[in-house]
Length: 161
Image 1 (cartoon, rainbow, N blue to C red):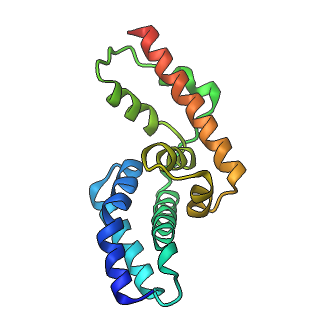
Image 2: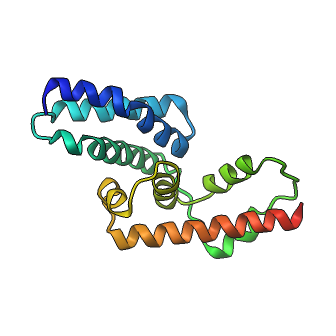
């Protein structure tokens, strides 16, 4: 990768990377820090990286930086099927987007990340596998489990409303 290709990456991918990280971490300052860290790591390794793989490298680096931070600060919450009843609210929601965002925030970090990469950013299973370091079959399993949780969460909310 050349310096010019690196600069093109900054212009082309910064907003998408920031949006992805912000959607996961819900903290603008942290998301900005993670983007900055990702570009710093890319800069330190730009001679070793193929420009065609820079986007994947950036998202992978950003994702791993975020996960490391979350693990370090112990903010990972595990949700099992048994926990669904504790996530039901008796409030009426008129905004489906708000309801969906609330449901997404209740997902475990790995499931949240793969769903956001697939459904919000439009990555293929193979690309998500490369970004997250998970196998393609594990990515599919996480997406399936996340979608089942989201469906059950939204259906229960509609029944209450």
